Image 1 (cartoon, each protein chain N blue to C red):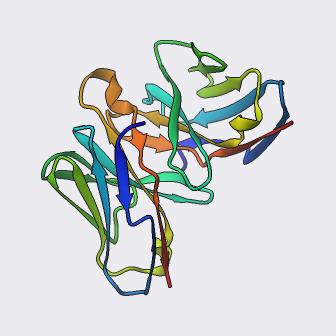
Image 2: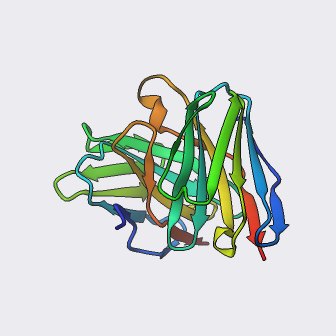
Length: 111
Length: 115
């Protein structure tokens, strides 16, 4: 039973436009959420996080939105750049130090 | 970037042989983790450590053991490798203070093929 789901295996976006990556979760005890980006043959790199006491967190071109009632979070990238092409993983935590990851979404930004 | 290295980076082995993967950190972080990444599953936690000689099981621990005799090293052992353990293995570390515990930083990965 997947507690964290990324239902879109892939997403293709034109350079300069907005990329929206979605993530749903089922465990209401999750209180901390993170996004990681992964390039081929490299380890995941931390991108941005959000605590359940907030509904939005912004860092440059990246914004994460959390909708607790819907158990849904999204990552917005504006404007999208070709270098953003990667696999994006959503992760959630209910207990300190134990992260549960989604299956990932492949983002392709076309120039 | 966090100072995390993994060795070997690539390994091909045969079914039934033991395999040990090493994770080394230079950040003096308390927590260390081993994950495997497989298509359609994202990253799944195998084992983790919350201090020297303190380890616990993760979601997919069967067939794996770990050891941590020093803060900087965390070893993952496949006692008798099987084809189902063909995967990419990632080590991660995190700090031990405040909310930063949940932000984990990953190594470059080890690609393991079990024939």
